[in-house]
Image 1 (tube, helix red, strand yellow):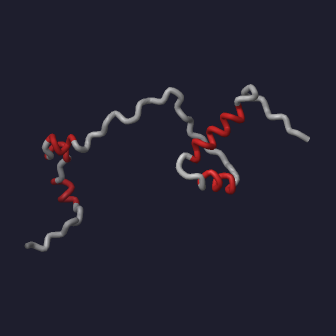
Image 2: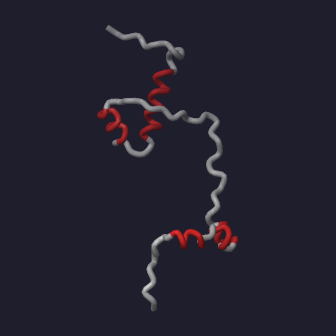
Image 3: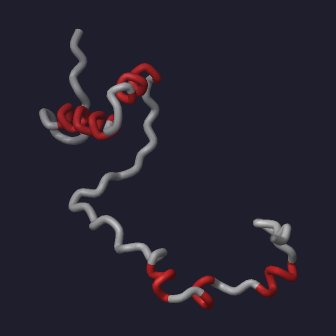
Length: 93
């Protein structure tokens, strides 16, 4: 057996000779790499936000395992159902 390198240096000459996979691979091989349509669009999509929370609060929710962000969302939703939007909560003395 020869001592061929598994990953030879990518030189300019090799790049000039390179061809795209879709130009040289058979259709059954290419079909394995095609992606499906993905997830269906959500009826009520989430909005990415950046929020600063205390470390201990984040640690508490992360410790509950996968889905911790969904649990935070549920708690925030519950906190907003008893007052109209834009209204600040009343501070108790």
